[in-house]
Image (cartoon, rainbow, N blue to C red; front, side, top):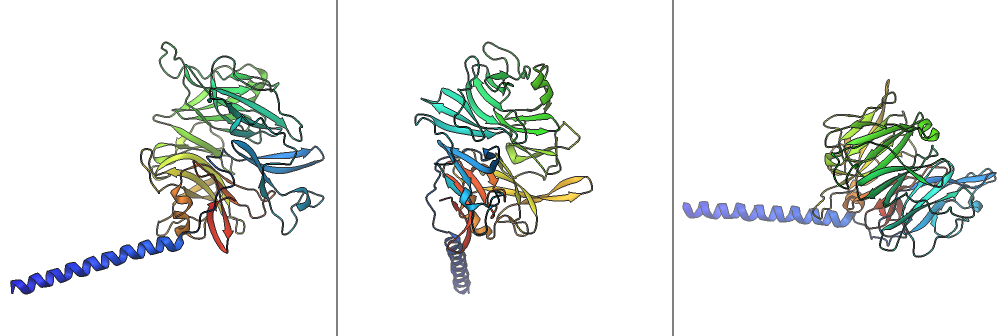
Length: 423
């Protein structure tokens, strides 16, 4: 009797092993089936943020999208692809270029590490030598030459630049002996001035102020909102900056806040994302104070700071898209982004529940196959996300600047809609 029971138990164990092995093979085969051949990226490394800037003569300007990775790249339909009113002709579309458009080139020894754009100028942040020398250059629309170098007075290394595309003011994040600080471009556009944010920690020898690294700028109703990778979101009026009478800059202080980025929604409210857990904070259209939306309104994993608005080409559904990173300390293939649907309410816009690949009833809306996304872009941490406007790209292509794998896009390749390196 005992021998029969033992044989029965062994049979069950063997059957279980076979079932588990079969499930494992099915999962592996499914993963292989959803993978697509990787393309070599046209724009390599860790590209910068993407910006749109109207380029051309006063009588003939067209919107152009820019990104940089060492050198500057532009994305737009050419003049022969547009009608006399500047509209893209049927069947034509944009492509990435490094030459042409009349953009003056930069010396080879300079490496472009960041870009920004205002209504009137395109800005680049360049690094030379070992990285201790950084300068900002600006270019007017249709201009034939870059400006003289724009630097900070005294020691300091410019690490990031931001501007609201609807405004005319550039901000720079600078790291020096006393930590991080925020600077802004003066009215003449020739020099950077320190933004007096006040002491944020106890002063000690060589350390007086540390704002945290500048991570985002939004202009709303004449007020600049400035996020940093520390506990504060600052705000200052454009009128004060223009008049040169900047006093104490206002700030919202949030405990344990390390804000990786911020973005303005269509209803004029502003969203900022915290690094740890990716909690979302919001300032309503009539408020300057940021409050956490709720315990469930979060990216679920650390936020990278990549924030973008995505709109369905046909159907009109809109999303807030936020980059995530599965781990800061180990290699992980759970990266990419999550989504929050923008829902119209009587009081403006609210955010729907988090959407992410792999969830049963709440998968990503910006892709047609969540499994393909998980085996491609979903494995990569992202620095920036941006959807090309229809005025530039009739397909409204969605782009992602990865941290090390170059620029990616969501396109139909070989008949398959897929995330892959832009080539």
